[in-house]
Image 1 (tube, rainbow, N blue to C red):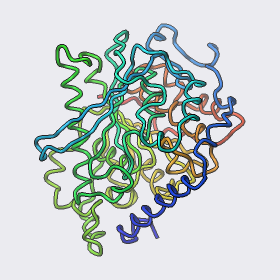
Image 2: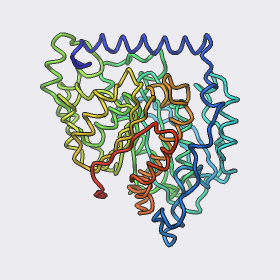
Image 3: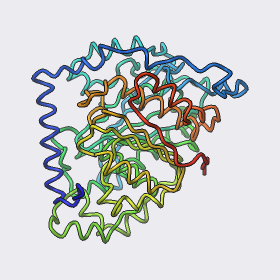
Amino acid sequence: MLLYKLPISRYKSLSFLLIATIVLLIFIGLGCRESESNHNSSDDSGPPQEDDSGIDDANHDEFTEPDQWGPYGVGVRRFDFYDTSRDDRHLPTLIYYPAKATPITEDRYLQAVQEANLIERLRQIAYCAVEDAEPDYHNAPYPIVMFSHGSGARKEEYKFFFEYLSSHGYICVVLDHTGNEGIINYWPRYMDMSLKRPLDISFVLDKVLEMIDTSGDPFESLGDPEKIGLAGHSYGGNTTLALVGATFSYDYIDELCKDDPGDPYICPIPGARDFLEAHLPDKRIKAAITLAHDGADSYFGPDCIGVSSIKIPIMIDSGTSDVMCPYETEALPCFEQLQSPAYLLKMIGGGHIGYTDFVNFGPMRLNRMHSLIQRYAVAFFGYYLKENENYSYYLGDVAAARWNEELDDFSFTSKTSAKNIH
């Protein structure tokens, strides 16, 4: 029996209990630093030699090695946006960006992580990024990457991802989906959260592009409005798929909701069909990454058939120790249905919480898991947003074999080598 054949509210309630148990275990002694403290340098091999990498020196000025921290310092700023078209919906936002600050090194980052307690990992906005630092315009404009957090997560819980990307020359924008942020709102406060979330992303993107286009704004001309990416974790991965063109299976959802009409995650969707089809997809987004997305056999129909309508490049990250969004029922069927350029990162021993700054409940060390997520995000967005051919090497078998040497703890699969930029 497929996971989503169960009554949906029962599955989500069980998921809530699982997360609550995880948080409790962390507080009573599962130290979140343990995964970081035994960092193994063997999974951070240096850049390839000139004779085997295929790196083009003539195009090297825009290229940064994806398995190392980038050359930029990182800044972060807080914003409060209000969508007046939706009853002044409040969307607290963080923007990470290349800044005139000391570049982040691996040692400095790991030390900052080890010194942070659980509450700091939950609440602080940066490990090494400098709040309100002056933007670095040296290679501007930079690509923009939007981010949608998981159900019950918060914008501050993915610092490892934003600081790393920004160090490689990206503007990262993450917001709180109000009413679905924090553990007390794991079960969404509003019945129409699956409708609100995509509009949250599009609205905040509007505001960011306004700042970039406004003379005298601190972010004037810092970002490139033609190079926009999106990433999301768990429920945010589902939001990501919806925003980039996955088709909701309205009739199928109606059938699923007959026995559970009050489920806030999917049951309001069929009644909003005209509205959703008028607002989705957001065609400004050129490439996207899902991190342990959910809903493969609910939102998008049997076997995730709805993602076959996506027309932009997609990378799916998944872990084999993820009991909430299992690889076999979520990532794999969606990857098989994708018709656009598609990539699948399968991490052996990666768990659902390992995509955050907390801890990985699985055999894979948290730092190793983060390292794979980071380097493949840089390679993927570097190829499809920066349009730098040098990154194609890191989306291939040779780089995967090198990064997998001795550890043999992940696989990376590509369905097509075609490049699709629109």
